[in-house]
Length: 260
Ligand SMILES: NC(=O)c1ccc[n+]([C@@H]2O[C@H](COP(=O)([O-])OP(=O)(O)OC[C@H]3O[C@@H](n4cnc5c(N)ncnc54)[C@H](O)[C@@H]3O)[C@@H](O)[C@H]2O)c1
Image 1 (cartoon, helix red, strand yellow):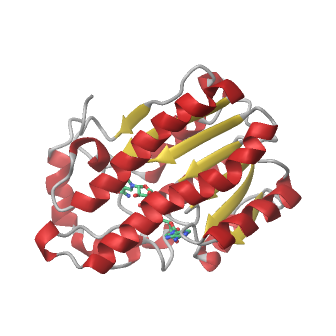
Image 2 (image 1 turned 180 degrees about the horizontal axis):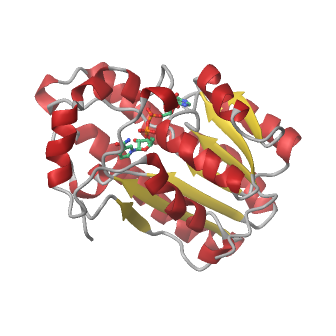
């Protein structure tokens, strides 16, 4: 299938590590120009360095900070033109029982996962409206579809991303802009492909021991947890004109963990 992504300008938030990194590489392989908007500049630069020269722009962006996001959008316009594609991938969580979880962790989950989506989408939309074209693909989570154990507030943030995407699909479909959500299940990060700010480099990653991952895999119909590369084809498809008649949809890419 010809995706027609060559020459497209894309922004990938959280594009430095794990799933976001794989999405950046997938877009670059299809010929797109990509801005990585991520707090982890060093890891984003590593991804740029492993890409062909001039195809990946690194922008140190904090998606929770409106001014930082506005600056990133302006610099992307100057470097790569008006973005055709936005992939909202930045996210943060630590799995913990609701009763054991400190408020500071909920606040960070809400700031990155909900406000991050709002800030970046709001900053970019006027430019998509002006060109009557846009593809917004957001990374949700199966947690947001089923309400996952030890992920109460995170599940709520991802359900929010799904609901906001549906509302925006209704509001902006007439302007040629589509909004869809891809929901991974567990996709462990690796040391070589995840920077210091990745959840996989901290307490969250440490919880997912090989034994835990093996146990989780047994609950998946396809009997394995995901890889970052598993997520990429669905994102590229929804970011392309092959998906021009698809909007407001939520697609799980999780080995059949959820089916709805
Ligand atoms: N990996 C999984 O098991 C899994 C499962 C379901 C959903 N998801 C979702 O997929 C997305 C990517 O997950 P991942 O495993 O690659 O995570 P990750 O932690 O490895 O990568 C997240 C990236 O976002 C960046 N980031 C964090 N806070 C930021 C901020 N305030 N501003 C800008 N960038 C910021 C980090 O530097 C990192 O590069 C997230 O939205 C996550 O919630 C992941």
